Length: 294
Ligand SMILES: [Zn+2]
Image 1: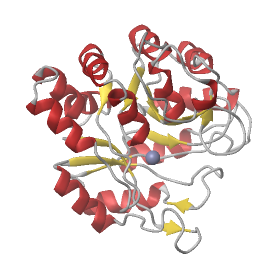
Image 2 (image 1 turned 30 degrees about the vertical axis):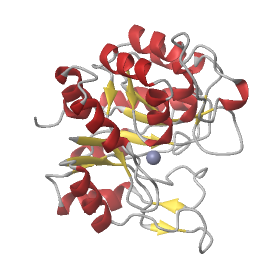
Image 3 (image 1 turned 90 degrees about the vertical axis):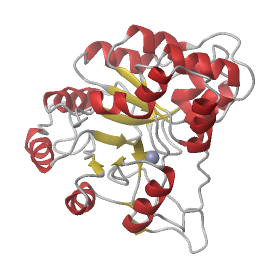
Image 4 (image 1 turned 180 degrees about the horizontal axis):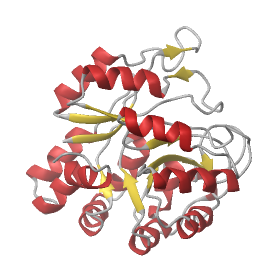
């Protein structure tokens, strides 16, 4: 099993007793992955973009962790699209090349609160592709208020970016991405957890089917909500998009409840999807997309 989305938090700047106090350390994430049966796991930087309020783990922290556990940690780097010259001409090759040589397998979690198709982002996506880095992104419904790349209802900006950057692999994450699993996305819940039956497939399925460079990260409450809000539809979705989905948890706090492992255990034991689909989602897609050793 490969977990496509975890965090280790080096610095926590929040209020004592506030949400996130129980942040995960290296030792704890190893324990959490052991108990969940994940042999390997992606560790994502946090706080590289200034919109993330009070966590910090830089790519260098993750590379140090990776050196200690090269057989388990899959390191990602991150670069803010505004860095360099804060223009669509910024050259990131020197830093992306450095991270590539150091062993990074992708870029993200991208959390800059810019429009998804902001020219500065398109510039970073294109350059990431040259180094073979898929982009794992956190999607949000507006500019201001929180972190994450912003898109409108129906994800037109994501679509434009995929068209303009056909060589870049995009891995979608968070509420605004997964809310689009149903055609009727309530405006006020675009950054929430809409529930109820998926009466008609949403824009997400259209984009997953149309663009070979789009994948879905099933981690966090948002990913799990999308596939469990309508359980029967969820199994159909997993089977249909078995080549485009990846298992993940988004562990960042010891207090966070992560029922993903139990859900997939039920799916496997209850034979809700084919074994082929199960294996792709739990591991094989990550090996292919991140170009890992099998
Ligand atoms: Zn995350």
